[in-house]
Length: 303
Image (cartoon, rainbow, N blue to C red; front, side):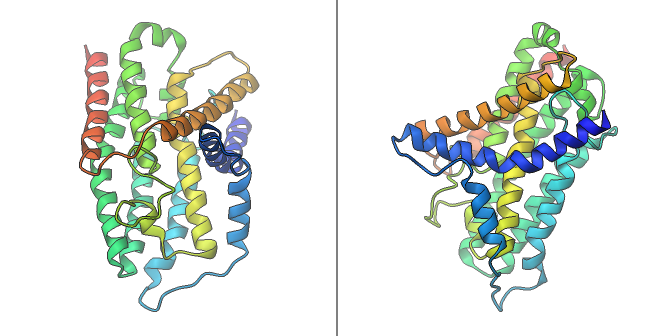
């Protein structure tokens, strides 16, 4: 089982940028364009790794540390998330708290690296980032608390191994509310529409992208790769709830999980193609709604 967990971790490291390519390809198809190939994120990462980094004289070691610490934190988080019915590479009671705070650590270093530049635009993006993060984190914690209550454990691997099709039959409404809440968390944490537009270049409307404007070369490659891994992490949590397949054959479970991740990427592309980004004053309402959905799911399982 440890070998399977290690292979799933390696699978996440290899296939994470593919999700970004699938999202972009889906948006291009819906818009009637040829679009970039699915493998384009890999080419972008390779190109950036071959370039040199440029640093402003106003920045300090904080600016250079941000992308490295962010990538390291995401890599540890990858080892904590189960996939395809197999436990995570690192699993222990209470690892859900470590997982949530690792994501918070990524955000913290991204924010302080943006503030270290002294740019007013990056400071504006950092302010928006932490504001929305304070609203989306309760939804994540309430969702994990709901799963902990359903399965009676505080380990992410044990929680998701306890989700079965029979459990859906008994607590379908609670799991449906939880899946909806996690979908909003997935879109918000990954700076996707309707919370943020990852393709915009208008500083006044950017949130995440404006914080990384001054990064270049390998540093920017680390940021892009961290974002892809984060997309995989939160997507794996959502897929683990929606497709709790326990066939007894690990290869079949893995194929279904990978297919679910691709389907989630296609769904994300369709969402971004069918709706516009919300006004900034409306985003908090969406995030609070996610917390309400997660809270309702918790109430249902506490009955």
